[in-house]
Length: 382
Ligand code: BJ8
Image (cartoon, rainbow, N blue to C red; front, side):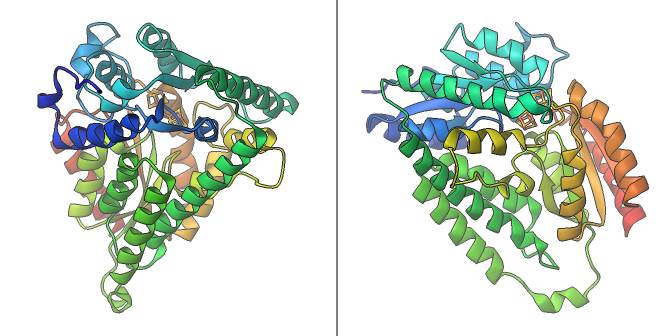
């Protein structure tokens, strides 16, 4: 019989639902691996017969608990993730048998050392750059070692056949997510960025691949049925791209707000967005090599250089017919903050599009100020 956390009654509805769903999987004997980053080759987890869950915090919850240990000046995503973990407020952390982590930004790396005091954490050493002859080789070796670690941890063997099957399954999910994202290529977009991002986020509450794909396909169909081509003759709402740090913690104060002001966020240019979903893992080659190549191609500011991000942005901007760009940088995220200088130059000077940068955290204290800046930005675009 699985024990509820002592503070279960204080959980909000979303977390209660997540807890109950995952509890059902645990009762069926499912093993759970917590993850924090898009660079995690989740196929390894799947091939071990376990399920992966994201442990990234995306609200103010847990931040005060975290600040008793971590510096207040740290990125809110790290503080929230850590605080939820140490206070048993995250159902996914509660049920995780182990954590699979990787060396991305400094804050996360050091946080993993502290998490390891609560749950077993295996850290994969991600190369700091994507180029150079040894990068893929080193990453492939890390993936192999991790397969061995996870296999031993769960007392199973991750065979190449299991890994191949996991690759095919994850590619199926990537294709379904991409189709959902691509609905907003239509003009006018039949769905708001807020609703689309809620749907993608809700896949975190589905724990089997069939469930995820079925849910995404039915939502995509529903969105497509809402398309009104006749409205393309009406005055066009500005079509915006949101780039920068992961945006789930600012959906209300940026995505919802900008859409209420009369624009559409038609593309979410984050590491989990369409630019990553369209990169499939090659199903025809050695699975370790295919995984190493695919995951290392993901563009994130933790890489140096990170030129691929700009190539991705250019094609996404064209495909989604973007009129302007909002870059969101979380406080204390040094890699995205420094890279934002290049982003601004690239978007405004090379692509000639309006650009605004918003520095923020997960609190609502700057909502009014953000609204004023967004209003001025939209006035400039319209
Ligand atoms: S692949 S974006 S999930 S590292 S935690 S870097 S906001 S200071 S999340 Fe990320 Fe992987 Fe890259 Fe994506 Fe900055 Fe905060 Fe660090 Fe962050």
